[in-house]
Image 1: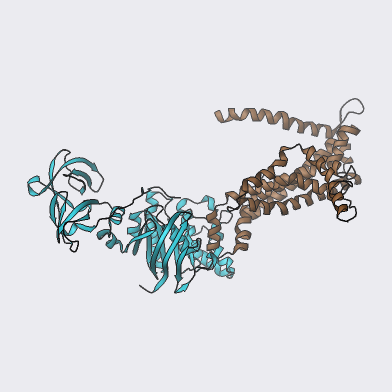
Image 2: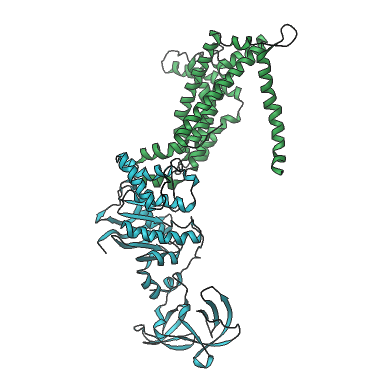
Length: 358
Length: 275
């Protein structure tokens, strides 16, 4: 992947007493699909709006292609935005909406007509030029919004929870389409979402944010498999986060029982957080494991069963394709490389909104 | 259907207070009972095409048009200021705009007399700072002023209510697509506010065209508008036939103007306004 197209250097933003962004450093490579992921109020949308030019940072620099653009107004920036609620012009037709940017730039009308057709094709809306916006479904409106942005051939496309208002099935389809579009047009995408699954599906790079700070930057695989702290583990996927004691290198006491692990360098007898993904917990016969627990709840989830097992001091969440009986005694084992040890920290987790945030 | 049952009171109301009076107007306009019995006639309709009346109609159209344009020029920026998010004194200003409407219409118009008279407040002030007396009343200016003053809120409020409803993200989208503030206004805000503009024009133009109080008070009876003539037919001359015919003409004029305004509006907006 190419050079850095956008750089954020030490960005701060406050609204009254509320610190929305608390010192963000980030660079975005040309051509990549980068997602800002976090719960609502984590500062992801504010970050996007600062890049778009709709908010001014209280501190720090924004570089575009190496040039500082803090003072460049939104309408002069070489990027375009797809807004959460589409923000289409209801007084114009589909074609006129898409042609809005080129018309402002006084490109010749014949070229505009050609481009409109081309981008309607890209978003699978051939022949919709003369339709009224109000006659389109939510998914179609979102496609128009994407075409309206792409036709300007921006270097960077900003997308603010563009699929938030769509239903699940349509959202999945649009995710695939977005990914294909990203490959086809070769533009840098900066995507904001609170949906971790969406982030994992779409992104080359994920930036996990909480409380105005970046928690971790990495590829989806890194973020999922090697969460840097308990917040990331909590927010991405499902996990058991267990307050434990690091006895010595490669040995950790979880839920009162010593487990072999692969982590070193945490000192001796120190308090740590251990993260174990539910699908990494192995349930065995009680005599086959040191840690024993009792099944308290079994829920069928389609692909797997979600099983809650009460250990000595922790209730384990387990994903397994094999059902268990409530009340059964079981042994719990975890392979050493599936135990993720991290420094203990108090995590502030605001309730995660599953609905669209405003 | 329960929906129909709920609409019944309105239907009754509308037939008694709108349809029946309208039919009466039509009835009087086309009948004559001077001979003791009621006969059909076109005399009243012919009478309204006399040069005298046509001149008055022309003057009425002209003055209400000027008043509407002035209202629009004053009202649109006012509505924009009101609708802007950072305007702190919004509620105070809204109350100030609506406040005059709490007062009696006649009283409000009378109050202008004491301002505009030859011995009124303004002229006394002008005399004080050494200017001579200026003729402020008994002319077109005073009548248009009265119309603008009385009907300005009806221009501001509908435009304001449309402007505040425009989603801020639409404006951001326009900027995002390269539009500067002037283009954002010309290509997005103004077209989106057209329904409000159409309502505003309708609600100022119609009462301005048919007013008789403003012209009588502020011109001292010197300037006659169509409203004054109609009023005279009913209160002084007693010629209900001619009065009704003129009323019909006024309605036709308003109807035609509304079609015109709405057609223009439709072309630029694609969304409907009044009517």
